[in-house]
Amino acid sequence: MTDKDLYGGLIRLHILHHAAEEPVFGLGIIEELRRHGYEMS
Image (cartoon, rainbow, N blue to C red; front, side):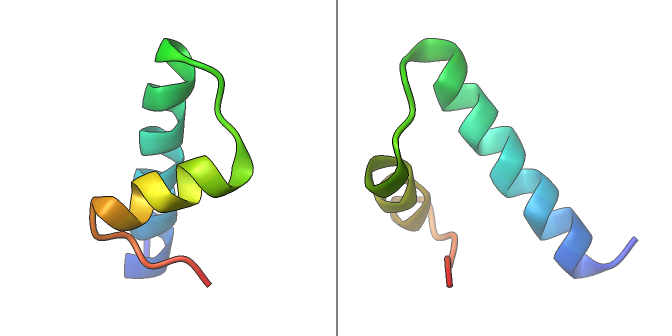
């Protein structure tokens, strides 16, 4: 497993966490991930 694989998995896990609580939409989740320090390209 590479760092990139781990990083991608953490992002997916974070998105699933939010999706379990409320609907998730593009820009909103990107902003949320950035708030937690994730870099999206």
